[in-house]
Length: 255
Image: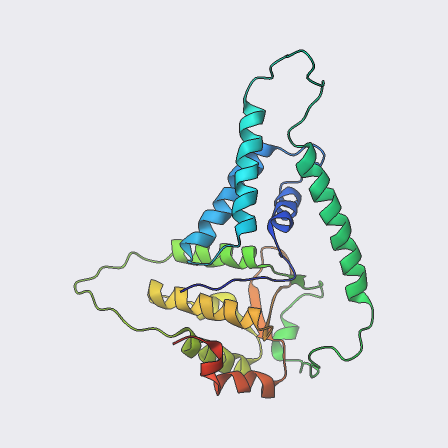
């Protein structure tokens, strides 16, 4: 069971590479290709462990990075006719810079007023949690940060001891309804609160897939108040729209 996930934050392999370069404070004109390749492959491996369908572009970029890495590690042959300063990273840097320019322009257009958008949101009601938060601007969270937070929770789970193997039938649609119901009641819930101690790995994985399904449907927001703080989930639509998801499990396409 898998789903394709495409978010505004990360829409492809170039987006992921730009984020890794920013996270490592690298110069885009002098990419440390060995380090970036290793980190990129770890992200791909993590997504595959979570049974998420990866677009072919991500795997193609992984092959491209490995090829560039191998060329960077091999000694340079001084052959007659070969141009001096031939850097295997040149084409990748050109693509990254071009993509970055398009992304910056898209961000400018996104800030412009757009009449008759797909959804009209009701004003959020201020809750008691606002008094506990700082006045810092909230940070948008992408799919990879969310997956990293989920992997951290899995790694810190106690070792499960099984005496009898019993396969439990778990439905993503059912867990979508559970998450929607909780957000209708609480309006804003910390990501970690969905994974309490004692929860089995199967339930954790299905819960995480249900969250991704709600993100793909643009039903929930995922935010942080500051880096390294808790990740929060909140409704991105009116209670009526979110409630409709709970009454139409068949539309989700999961059993």
